[in-house]
Image 1: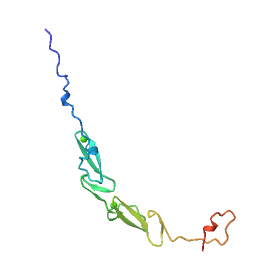
Image 2: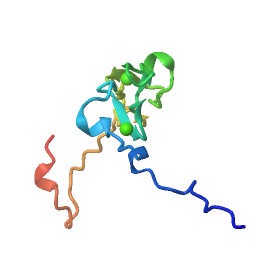
Image 3: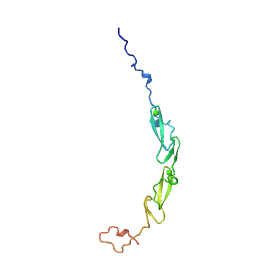
Image 4: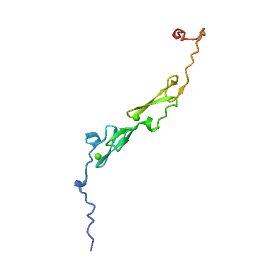
Length: 123
Ligand SMILES: [Ca+2]
Ligand SMILES: [Ca+2]
């Protein structure tokens, strides 16, 4: 007597599902300030950097109010959508992350021979 062949390995092509990429076909429910990540049978939404929320709704993080900025102590923090800016206070100069005291301009009465910016220096 022989045992019957194992028929549990039969293929059932109808069981294969094709994933829909909701991110590219425009059916995702992500906020416009979120990134859509396609998954098998679904998709997920992740708020962009500078925004917080559940992905379907993302709002700007006020880095200035929350104190998570890296502006210099002599700079003003200005919240922007998705980010923030730093601007040195009056009397200081720099990029906002580094602010230095008033710029002292040394006026050279006589330029060295090799100076190529002499014509740009005006009193
Ligand atoms: Ca999908
Ligand atoms: Ca912001």
